[in-house]
Amino acid sequence: MFGALIGAAAGTLILTGGGFGPGVAERFGALAGADARIIYIPSASSGIRLPSGFIWIPPEQPDATHNDDAFAGEIARLLHVGSVEILHSRDRRFWNSDETAARIGRTRAIWISGGNAGRLADLMLGTKAEAALKRVYASGGVIGGESAGSIVIGSFIVRGRPDKPVLMAAGRERGFGILPGVAIDPHLAESKRENELVQVVDAHPELLGIGIDESAAIVVSGTQFDVIGQGRVAIYDNQKHGDTWYYELPVGSRFDLANRQRSAIRDRDPGSQIRD
Image (cartoon, rainbow, N blue to C red):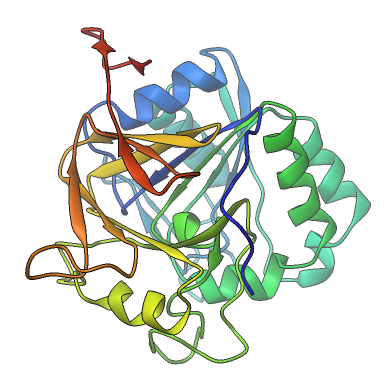
């Protein structure tokens, strides 16, 4: 129903559990390029507080901050890139326009904020903007996401109803499928969600569940991902592992998405670039 696991692709995904652990933003910046102009999509959120303390509230809110230029500068510093274009709208027509798709197509790096994954799906699923995101990834670009931005990259959306925080909402489960065959659950330890994806993969055994602590991230390249940051990632494969229905991958681990199993790492350099 939600697609097979990912095949080899030219691009890279960096998906966090909701924050920026050690080395996560730096990895995105290195992949995007220090002088890159990237796109940042904050439309899942009703308000963003950055690690620096800077607050951005979208124009649809009565307490909107109207500080987009300063916000873009803060994001550029956070993600270690040259400059940032804020791409935001709560109008689905905006996301289905040729102009918006072209703006996405002119960049090689995109970051999608946290917030509400169901809201993001309502706005972008099936639009020209979604198709443009997939083309950027397929052609070698980098897409990053945090929390809701990570959830929507998978095939299955948890808590997909903007108006009701249920885990599985019939008719509102489909994500962008940029990482197909996967359901992602962020804030794993912090929100005590360790058992949530057990329910999801029981109902949809074709899915692989990936839970991510807030300060951890997965870096997907081809058919594998590495765990970076701080904390851990949990794998839900509909198999029992000791007393639980999941097992944990610490930082430094590598996982093979095609075979659904942990991979051996033969070499790792001091800069945390994990490789075969």
